[in-house]
Image (tube, rainbow, N blue to C red; front, side, top):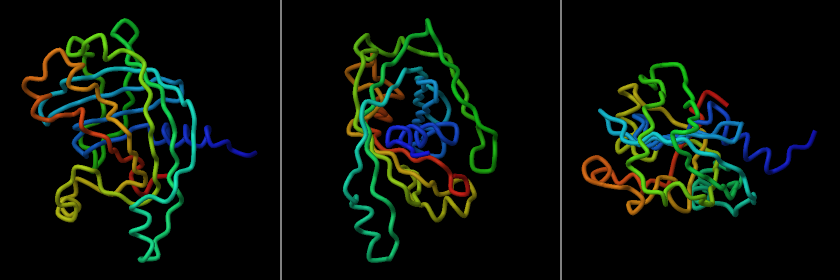
Length: 206
């Protein structure tokens, strides 16, 4: 049976619990479920400031030209397939219709399972709950999480490993600073709305 580009793109989004991370400690996480729902969280090492559910749909897909990363790796005889690009429509939803966040087993590289904090929508203005579209690129390869300053030291310490897919957004899926009721404290210090890159599928998995 032939797989359509849309089905393939969606299967990548939702595989491995549908979980995509900005860093191994869960500073920003986004998850896509096969039923068209998902979950976005923004956290510090000590607290989760935002946990919000959303509905998503795939509007269109294309195959992108080789990325800069692919071109840089070509002289090393490391060839990865072209990136797949899709247009996603995402609508954050209120606490009136919550979607359980996905969980995954605790292991050596993920000391805390993903859990749903209390949905804190009072941090967001009504504008944050409007439908938005995003162009999302998925690139297969071998990647460290975006926010790992010393990947070799982190690997030796045993708290991070490489991932098999890189996800890039044309704009952050996190509501912009203007869509928060207040950015004082954690939001202002971390600027989660600047995060546009995630990794998924720990190596050794799919």
